[in-house]
Every structure is written in C-alpha cells, then in structure tokens.
Image 1 (cartoon, one colour):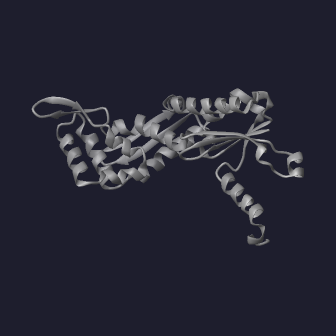
Image 2 (cartoon, rainbow, N blue to C red):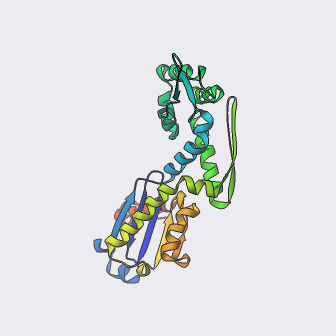
Length: 251
C-alpha cells in the first residue's frame, strides 16, 4: 500500500494505491486506487510567499503616499499581487497603471522603491525575479540559509533568508497540505501504519518542511523519492506504452 505525493507548480495531489506481485499477476483493477485527494497549493504558492514577504516590501508595498490635499494612504497592494506571478507582470504594463504608480511615487514615503517597481515593470523583469526566488527556494531545501539577490534600478535586494523564515512564511500552505493528507487517510479507512511506503515527487518534495509532513505521520524509513523532476513524465510514457503498444516503436 503506497501513498504517492505529487507536488507540481499549482497543485499537490495525493493517491493511495495498492501495488505488488499479486496486483501484477492478476492485472490492475480500479479498486487498486484506494483514494485520491489534493489541494491547489504547491511550488508557485511558496514562490508567492517569498515575493510577498521579501521582495514586495523593497519595491514599495507597505509604504504610504500623500493624496491631495494632505491625506496619507497605503500604497495599493493589488499591483504586488500581480508581481507574485511572473507572467502576470505584463498586465501591469499599461499606460493607466504606470501613470498611477508614477503619481504615487511622487509623494511616496519611499519613492526610490516605487521607482524600482516601475523599472521592473517597464523592463519586464518578472522572469528574472522569479528565477532569483526559485534559486533561493532551492538553496533552502539543501541548506539552512540562502543569500537572495536581485537588482532592479536603484534598489538592490540582497538579503540572507533562513530556512526558519521560509517555513514561517509558508506555514499556512503546509497546514493545508497536512490537512489534505489526513483527510485522505480518514476517507480511505486506513491507519497510518497500514501504509507500507510513501513516494514523494515533484520539485517541492525537496522542501524539508513538506517532507516532514510525511515523516511525522509515517516514519522516516517509509518516506522515499527519486527522479523527482522527471518521474511524472516517465510514468506517462510508460502508461502510453501499455495503452497503445502498437504505436510505440521497439528500441
């Protein structure tokens, strides 16, 4: 009895499936899939938390600006929500949005940060920003801290991020994943001890806090992985060969 956790970019999906010599001998049955569940949370959500807590404040989020005649207002948060997904950044590059941000910059408490945000939008640096975010996430999977670095005009964002910081930022997402696993176990009617092996795949399975969800429930010796970045594609290819053997050329 195997529990599989597949952590993609947008979703985390869990399946409990019965495998082994007996299943191979008789052939697969629909009943071998004991249960499935999932949450719309995965690697992209982790990236968003890094941007929200580390990057966006250095680009003006959390600051104030003066609205005539002399009213202090918070810098709008919605442009920074677009920043959390690199391919949404292009939606900010409109005359109306750029004019609004430029107007806010003139009376902002930290005008240089708004200037950096404007430059990031105009030069379409969203992809480079997210590369820096993902690099930090990757480094925190193997070490206890990472030196985040990103340059945008007058603002150079350089900050040491600890694994403890990162795990605090993604605590809500981790809780949702853990609750989903518990929900799946309850729905399946199985005890934690009845799971023989846990197989984790996908990039976010490298995140120690994600792995800890399963270690705490099933034990270190049962949790494994392998080919985390290619196993899904390999599985699809193998399934295609089974489904359409005549269409697959022999090696």
